[in-house]
Length: 197
Image (tube, rainbow, N blue to C red; front, side, top):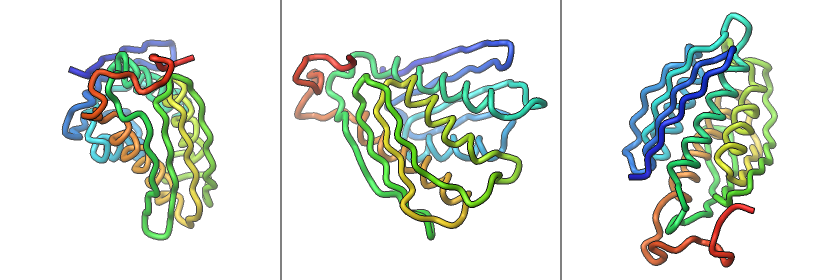
């Protein structure tokens, strides 16, 4: 029921995304970027949102366009799948440990996009993946999903662990926030009677 498909095509990328908010965490991801595929797989698995992503991008230039455009399309798909947002829990927050790393994530499915992202990576790259692209993806996703998202790594030493704790933290927060609250069935969780603006 809460499903969406988005197609995005530019001169730089061709993206196809599908989500099912009430899925089981199945992922079918192919972006051509191994580490990024791993992060999206974690996102699906731990959010229990079924995610399909097929991306053909100008990887000969760099990974930026592909990573950002997947964030845009996934954000749009989540927003579309949420529909009127009636009955959702809306808010969630948690701490996500990953070995020596600890990240705090808080989310408000508000219809008002905002991102606060505080994570410092000890290395510029994880394999061939530029660590600055983690923030780029989160910015694209939050902006297009219409969510308020705070991600802060409190401490950590390993760049892979820091990135993974950010994605897993988002996954678990999304899982809780998009869940239907049985005590508020059919109600939009806002005193305004609507979300956004």
